[in-house]
Amino acid sequence: MPITHAEFVDRFGSAILAGNAAIFVGAGLSRAAGFPDWGGLLAPLQERCGIPPHSDLPLVAEYIEQDVANGGRGALEDHILKIITATAPTPTRAHLDMQKLPVKEIWTTNYDTLLEHSIPDAVVIAGEDEIHSIASRRKAIIKMHGSIGLDNTWQQPPVVTRSDYERYEVDHPRTWTVLRSSYMSRSLLFLGFSFTDPNIEILLRLARTLGTATGDRHVAIMKPPTDPSDLRLYELRAADLEASGVTICQIDDHNEIPTLLAALVLRTRPPQVFVAGSANLPNPTPEEEDEVVGSWCAAVATQLADETAWTIASLGGRAGWCVSRDTARLRRDEETYEPDSLVIHFRGKNQPPVTLEERVGTSIYSDLEREQLVAAVLDQSRALLAICGGSKTAEEIEWAAHRRVAVIPIAGSGGAAERYWNDHRSDPPDIGSRPTDPRTWELLASPDPTTAARAAKRLLLQAMYEGDGTKLKRNVGAGS
Image (cartoon, rainbow, N blue to C red; front, side, top):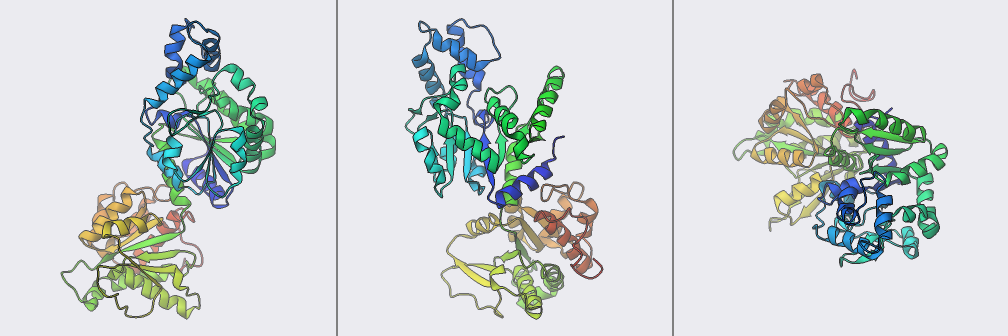
């Protein structure tokens, strides 16, 4: 039975955080970047050699290799090289998100350099003599079926013919042994594979020979066929794979893969919430701002005080400052205060450092421009909590949503938070890979700060992958 997207993100995200995950990239991710599929790659030589249509593409490559007059091994390798190097290696969003995932091993059967361009600091392993490098501390890209180097020449010749596949374990014993070891000891995510892909044989061979020893910790992202006549065969193949210990996460469109990877990126970040907002008044004094946002910040702080494992980050705006200050006061009273869990970022601005009203958290000064600084903080956060706010808060909300960071607006406080909430009132955005409960979203607009803050806490737990957004943990607040 296929697992849901939320189950996939939670399960494989947990494996990543445990340091026990690896990714296996198939041809589907290269096709999304404009590279041809297997059939398109072989078609010109297949036609020249007069080879009739055949579903076994490695066998087609075998016949091309045997036809020395019209093909041959040299012509086959030259043709593949020419076709692949003619396409600029422009990584997709899915490739770039893999760079952000704390996964040490990325296996691939692809010849192109998309992964190398996406993860420039990774060590590339393309041959038997290099497989020992997998033990280094750097992220490793293991190109087990050959590799085109950054100089557009074959770094290692391709595995492409039926004979290449059948002799793989004999010709590449170290690589195969390490892959088997990874399959036995890690949770593998198979991306960009389909049941019509010749490289699916690798997954099936691993699953059938080692499946009973690995349980169901491996996951394959699969898209069912659109042709109803092909659906029954897909179902049988999927059931075969699942019976061998590989769980399937089903997608309706390949465009869903970047969304799933983006969710994994969020899932594997440290649990940090970015608090944004202000009183949305012209040139206010701190006292005037507190009149507008003070009660909302105090209510939020009461809900956050128990979450000592979370980092509360802000840019020194009044809402962020008040939430941090009030949280610190509560934690000091309860002897749970740790300054590293409350981080306030300031821009240098060529001015003397800001004098804080009281010692709270950890202050970090930066020379980055505002948009760059906000982006840097958001890229380390799982959620943005907005309290009231004006045009700058609206910008920060927009930047967060663009980065798929969960936006949780305290709509009852008014301002930019209310406008974002109202824009999504009829269709609240998913949070933490799960649908947002409409009733909880409505409570964000409560005129009572405690009610709105409790609703925000439920959604923050969902963003932190600690809840489903419908109830609070038992130890949070009165009557929870």
